[in-house]
Length: 356
Image (cartoon, rainbow, N blue to C red; front, side, top):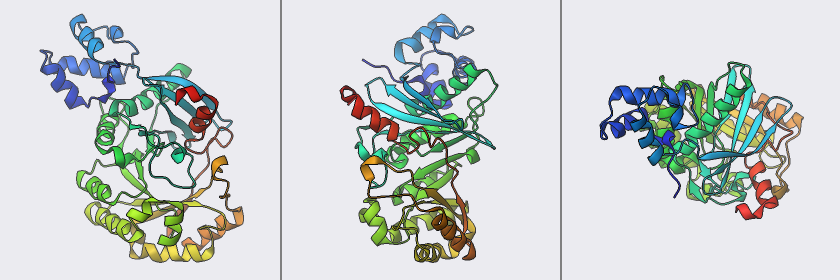
């Protein structure tokens, strides 16, 4: 039987669990330090922790629930990892290099049920949620990759934008955020973490109430219900009006800037009329909204969609700017290594059907 990941514990949970078994808070601090600062790969390597404690941990938990199945490195320094879980499922994690630091995009589910018609991640439906430990371990594995290079680099930013809908795995997401933010551990600043959702309105409100202090991005991708329903089936259940009401709740509650993600699809949602309609939809929310325009990464199985021309991207950007809307165009990373989220995983399933 597979053991759960030790990384699923928050600091408070680990302290309580060890305390119930007769181990002090100081002992928990030692274990935490070995996990996240020294980053051991075996419990027996925790040199100053007594053997009784390390054996207890080894009996109950796993330090390695992810194994590297495939790794691809781009010319721009992006590294895409395909990890295999203990049950044989595959997930993707991506390391990206920016001027401001090193960012890791993590996965929260095996597969995805949101069903965006342009997305490679949804080609394989949801199998299960990842545990908090499996999500945290993605960061640890990437950091170990950096450690091996011996260049004194560390993960500084996290985007929760990999395979799956993070808000559909809400409790594990919150535990993950608590662990990676912990200043005694990986110490990734909350303002350096962004969670992306396809638009689960109730969970947006709950996220505002819980306020883990991180950034929120919402995958909008269309200025009206007709287009959004066509490309994102979630819009049938949660139309734009309901989504914008939830966004208003978030903005009113936290007064914190939000990002609207907008993937540009040629002749679908990239005309000037769409940009004007998007600006009107944003309305007086302008001071707290940034639109992130995303050039489309073509997916073989979604051949009906094509990348917008550079002229169209520039026109869309300029139109929003003239309407007083803050916007940016996402820089591309790893275009030579299956850059679209889910592409590497879906290709592996085609070539290795026994893993399904």
